[in-house]
Amino acid sequence: MILGNGRPNGQYTPCAHCSLRRCTALRAFTPDELAFVQELKTDELRVDPGISFLREGASSEYLYTVLHGWAFRYKMLPDGRRQILNYALASDMVGLQGSLMREMEHSVEALTPVILCVFPRTKLWDLYSKFPSLAFDITWLAAREEQLIDEALLSVGRRTALERTAYVLLHLFVRAKEVGLGNGNTIQFPFTQQHLADTLGMSLVHTNKTLKRLTASNAIRWKDRVFEVSDRAALERIAGDDGSQHKARPFI
Image (cartoon, rainbow, N blue to C red; front, side, top):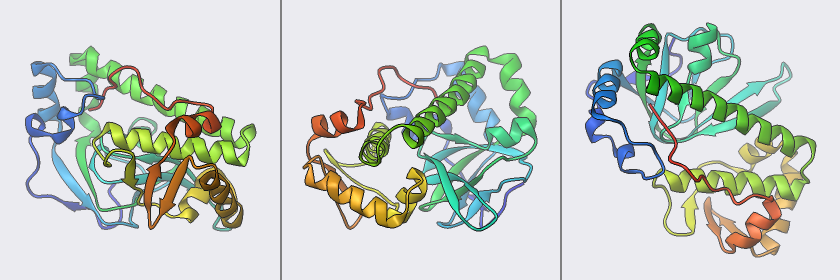
């Protein structure tokens, strides 16, 4: 079930010409895998910013890979409070939960204009039965989501406000750089301080004060959504992590 202003692209990028295949941080397909994924893909979907194209409680006939843009996964409480669970960038898969569990346990909203590669749920079994390597990749992607949730829980439970802010910003910076976004040590983050506060589980005032402390450490600069890592070692030290991926990761 596609919700919101999702619009079919009409024409879409052949997998062989996908810009993501040039990213060294992503695993290369074999020719047979590439041909199968091209057959599996049925369309591309354009989604406007602010549109939740997957919603909690809805069933999903499709799963998607983000081709361009940023989105975020979130849950809402009845009183309107929002918790952002994670961000989806180019190469990330969304909708797998709704495809396998029949119902979404969270919502996904486009943060920027987003283009999604569309894969029907009905063809997922073909992937598992015919291409064990791709089936393992989907298992890896699901395990990675669990790992990201573990880190988020660690941040909320044990990291200080400064540490969790540094960790999230470093993590998003590294992920964006892996898929070719940014220039050198700078990148344009599309999210606001309110998005960051909803990610960190902090108030907007607390988030603003923490960002000022992080900026005062000379580890980062963030103005007009342009984010710069001015001292990578200092940011890693505060975050308690180097944010690096040491192996090429899969995508579908």
